[in-house]
Image (tube, rainbow, N blue to C red; front, side, top):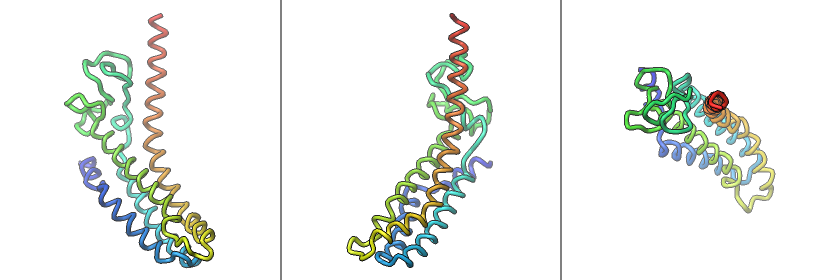
Length: 188
C-alpha cells in the first residue's frame, strides 16, 4: 500500500544524524574561507532541500492524518466512542485508531515522526554556520554569515514541512473546538 511505502521511506534518527554530520564535515572544510564556505554551504543547502522535499512527499494527508479529539471517550462531534482516539472517518488500517486505545492513529504517528526528523535537522542546520567555522578565522563573522545565508532556503523548506504537518493538526483542533463550543451552547 502507499502508506507502507511511505513508512519504509522514513529515515531513522541515525540516518539523519549521519546526514547532518556529513554536511557539517563538508562545511568545516571551509572553516575560514568566505568564498569556499558559501559554495559548500549552497551545495549543503541543496542536499538539505532535497531531504525536505522527500519529507514533504512522505507526509500523509487527509482526514486520517488530521483527526482530533481533545479528551478520551468522545469523537470530533462530541459523541461518546467508548475509547479515546484522534478518530478519523476513514476506516482503513492506516488511518483508523490504534487498537490499543492509543490516541494517535498510525498515520498520525508517521507524520509526527516526519515532523520530528524535520525539526531535528532544522536544529542541526541552524547550528552549522557557527559550529563549522574556525574560531580563529580572520573573517569569522563574514564566513558564518555567508554560510547562514546560503543555508536559509534549506531552513525555509524544513519549516514548510513542519508547517504543513502542524497546519492540518491546528485546523482539526480549531474544528474540534468550534464543535465543542456549539455542543456546550446547545446544552445550556
